[in-house]
Image (cartoon, rainbow, N blue to C red):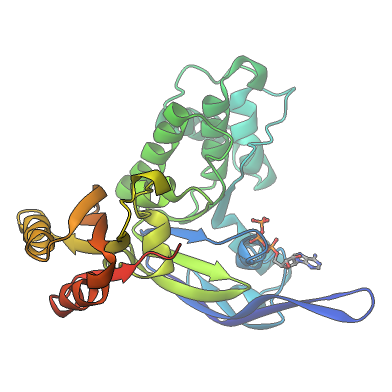
Length: 330
Ligand SMILES: Nc1ncnc2c1ncn2[C@@H]1O[C@H](COP(=O)(O)OP(=O)(O)OP(=O)(O)O)[C@@H](O)[C@H]1O
């Protein structure tokens, strides 16, 4: 388990101005979960990662990783604790003049592991990331996705129970992204690794994360399991993960306005059909819609056109039936 308790980080910049990068962040990440951290540029994501690895110390608060308060450790104890946290970056930053195997072995040499053990572990790791037999290839002979897999093997070299991934798929095409996400899932499922992924790709969150946090200006504005945040259909995360369908102005009939309708259902429960019947019975019309299955939930988002004079009563009736509905702003 990883726990952040009231973590704040304030940078003092020249001129005496304070920048609050993290503002009283409290967060619990379950052991063996894949947890996404999302937020706009400047939200504090990188600062959070640097504090988790104790590359930076928070101004206040505690960060508990593997039962140890990272903010209280110094010297050898801190170096040891850092070895329990693997890192994967957007660019794998491999050493070009060393083979894939030598890149993976690098952290083991630093940890002064036994030479025979190193070569066995490197083979194991290359096998784990689907690159068995490619240990003698140089980075330039590998695709971007393969290089990232070497980066993950290197991050996992010292067998850390926690893997921090900073935009691990942002530089990859869809096929390589899918392979990397499969690999992270496998690390969770077979080795019980806790994975934290910083990403701006909402597809990564819906594809692989068990839980997610939205940071905004250094604060946690939403946090929960994927099911919880999606089920809160009006919430900012739910809307970013499964956005309402877009509708061209030209497709909105004169005299009608759009109402955004959202609902979730469990597979096998005909919520979608019930909502569609309700919409029809209210004299409204579905202009566009999307249904997506994520985790154990199905999320439906509809753009419904409603005669202007009737809009308030339609919205009220949908809400009375526990269906999220609101007039789309122009
Ligand atoms: N070393 C620093 N000195 C001063 N301010 C900093 C420093 N590092 C980060 N900041 C500020 O802290 C805030 C959070 O930055 P951070 O890099 O953590 O955001 P981010 O969410 O990772 O953004 P991005 O997605 O663009 O990488 C920003 O306002 C940034 O300018």
